[in-house]
Length: 296
Image 1: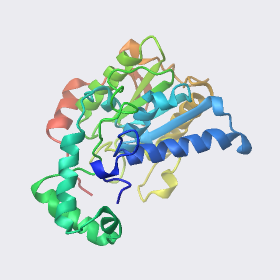
Image 2: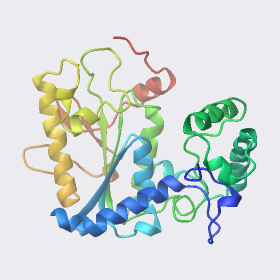
Image 3: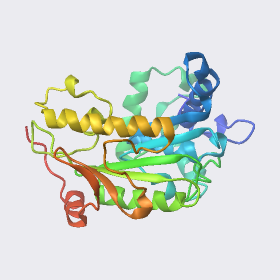
C-alpha cells in the first residue's frame, strides 16, 4: 500500500511521500541506462515512449532534473503538454487529506496493519471512499523532481507529440501540443502528428489509442478488416518513428518532409495521404463537445 499512498507517516528523510510510480519508473530508466550497452544499445541515444497516462509519465521524466541529458528523444502520444499546465503549487496537504480518509475507513490501527490488507479488500475500500470523495488513481503530489519544475520547463530531448481525430478532448490536446512546442523552442525540436484514419470495422473514427496498431506494426493482431492502405500507412509511420529513434529527427527518404511544430503544422496521417497540414478546428471542437458513440 505504501507504494502509492502519500501520507505524512511515510515521508522519507527528504520529506517526500507519494509519486511512487514516477520513482519506480525512474529506477527502471536508470537500470536501462546502465545496462543498455550489454544488449547493443547506446546510453547516449535513449528515446522514451509513452501513450495516454504513459505519455504524461514520459513527459514528466524528460523534463525532470533527475533525467537531465539522459534522453535523445521522446514520443508522447495522446497526452502531450499536461506537465506544461501543471501549477508548481504544493498540494501535499490536500492530497494527504484524501488518502487519510481511506486509511480511516480501513479501521486499521497502524500503517503496518494497513500494509497487510488484501489487495481485493483495498480496492473495494478505494471504490467506496471515492464515491463520496473522489481520490483519483493518478494523484500527483507536489515534488520538485517532477511537478515542481514541470511548468514550461524545456529539455534537450527532441519530441514527437500527437493526438487522434476522436481522441479524449482532441481540441485540448491540439492546444497542449502547441504549448509543449512553445516551451521547447530554442532548446530542442518538437514534431506533431494528427492521426485521422477512419478505422475499418466501425464508425467511431480514430479513437484514443487507435494509432498504436500502426506505429507498432500490430495490425495483424486485430480483428479489424485492415486493407493494403492501412498496412502502407503503418509502414510509413514506423519509418518515421525508427528514424526519429535513430537520429532524433523523423525525416527519411521517400516520405514527405515532417517539419517541426514551429511551422504551426502537424503531419496528418490518413490512409490515402500523409502530409503536413493544420487540423480543422471546427472538427476538433465538435469531437471534443460531442464525442461519437461506439457503434459496431
